[in-house]
Image (cartoon, rainbow, N blue to C red; front, top):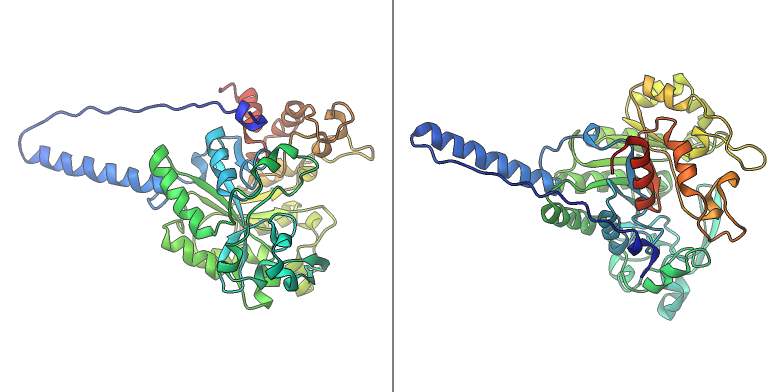
Length: 393
């Protein structure tokens, strides 16, 4: 039994309904209304219906980072499904394109570390060196493969040294397309009787647009096809490039989230456009007001919420939560993980970087700031931390 399976706790509530037969035209009208309401509920469960909007989500919202990636190879249907079984409120997908224009779920277009592509001699000549957003990478890239070719590959654990148990599942799943995930979410919504929320990121949008593989139009087309293009649809659209969220806002009404990296960094679209602003500028009240003009939230790195000192220990919270809320923005920071290697120094336990530290202690510090949600590789842990905060179990 894996760590993830030991933590699975099923919490299901079965709702029942009773009806009565009343004669006359008013009864027929009531029956018609009830049928329409039932149809609306079924449509909402698949994500195609009107939905209840992001303000209906529990707070703090637990977002399964690339699925339950602490327990399964990331961005696989197995990882997404386990995240739902563990109780995650929202499941994240990162999107990159294939050579023939399909959107697939990978954290990066470099698939060297997340697939078995290196074991395929027929693709040996595809290995190359590319510069993506100013950084050089050598490996295999999704934009050099057709979807049919990518489907011959199998997913594997990205950090096997840290998550050795996850390697048990190497080779079990293929790379999912985003359309497959949308269909999967519809099926899961019907089966579970609730909306399946997705948190969808456009990866390197400026880079891909330069290759003639613009992400936003392709994404918007799929969202419209599957009824997730409305303001209250169960989906967030996120990107580290503000212009990608602005472009999506012109195409669909789904809520947008601007991701924010380190304070001194600059979004790549800013670099390309000659915009001198840094993330530090974007987290000022003025910068947040600008973001709020086209987005509903921000996804800052946790260090922007509570910085670490020179020793790697947590310091005092910044004013980011208060300032973002003042502009009507929600905050979904990233990323909570259980392993010592990813925790602040003051919450590590022992010397093994792959061992679990005091994850609940770190979660309490972050959740106490008033953030609206958190990305986690270990959604079961994050849910228990959220329950500690709210008193719900």
